[in-house]
Image 1 (tube, one colour):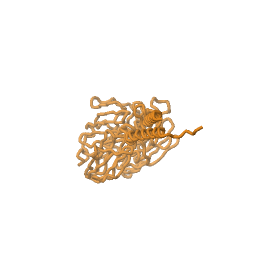
Image 2 (image 1 turned 180 degrees about the vertical axis):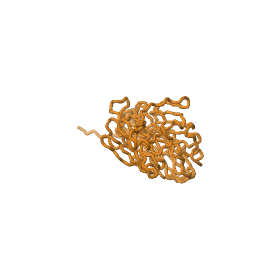
Image 3 (image 1 turned 135 degrees about the horizontal axis):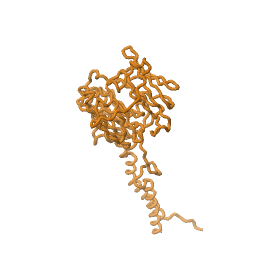
Image 4 (image 1 turned 90 degrees about the horizontal axis):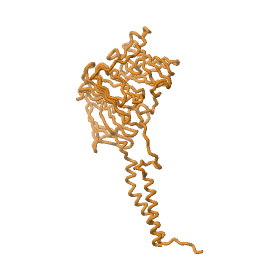
Length: 427
């Protein structure tokens, strides 16, 4: 039996198939590269510059998908410094978020800075030009501390961690804050700058109009219009709702009175509901609040740059100390689970050599005792809407119903068949 040799038509057919596949790969190479490296879902939207002072400013934005975020900034054209999301700086790890907020600090007064927004692995600017901001003058000591605060919940009643709260006050630079794992937020009003950055903002602590806009991406947004005498606290905000307290005063919420039966706390008790600028106060949990988290976050205010001792009276007493920042704010995450039931927080600090104390009761709900799902803060928790992603056989995003891999397979198979046809005709 004679051995079958490889004929010239056979070689020609194979070459045609290989050339056809190479051409197909060349045509698909650029689209695939573009899909992998640049995604519209990574692009920042609703970019705002807020909280401008003589040494800092804040940049916030949204993305359609959870990505990492950072700011690349510098003076004029020298923009090679990088600062990451505030949550990444606080936790020491880099995570993906739908909402992004970066505070740029340690800047020079009255100096122009340029910056670009980093989202995933790509930098974004304004059509080829960087964003720009100029810091304000150095000012003297700020007015007495005045805080506005509240809580934001999702439509399901969960804390809207990671939502962004924007504050607009006439004649003032807009202010911003991130919602904490407990759903609470705090914005210092007294340190806000005037629109021209030459002074602290002037406002009436009782009658000035103030507007809050809450943005949580696909989870929804909310708008609250009120006055400065109703912003400590702002009534609980639910995403998707609009509130206007200028039209009619909201009904007062009934709350059980604070337990001050112990006389040593009675004279020192201070609370935002009764004082405009208390020296020492607990902002969260609120009076007799019922919380779903077994590790609620304690937020409060005391003298600036001072030490505050926190004691939680439970079956096991928890005691720790925290340091307030330059605005007198502090937050503390309880390191262990609290059992369901009533608990008492006591915070103490020294003010002019005198010990000040504030005590507050709150209740941890048992699992299943509330329609609000149980919630425990975790270091990686953030706003994460439910997203359904079509299954693919490769790491490349889908386009319609055909993935690039499937297109290549179909094209390659077609070219091989074409080569066989040519071979049959030439044989």
